[in-house]
Length: 89
Image (cartoon, rainbow, N blue to C red):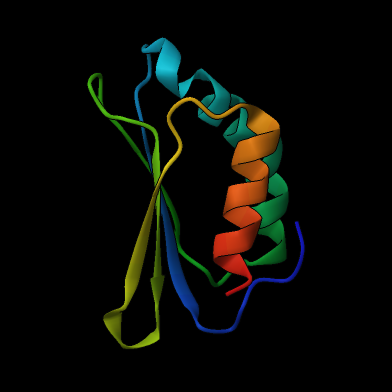
């Protein structure tokens, strides 16, 4: 992943442990979370799982601004692209 904007204060992923709609996000997290966390040890990266959760990513910026992106229907590469866009704002 490329550099994360200094204004990013938190990243939060919501997904289902079992629903097929979250499988691409689960795959993305398995492959990308370790590197993302290692490169940004001070940045909270939260993963929230629930059986009925839709795959979403929330990014919280300075002064409490928050952006939500629905990841349903996207494949792993599209999810990576969307997350990169959000983190480089």
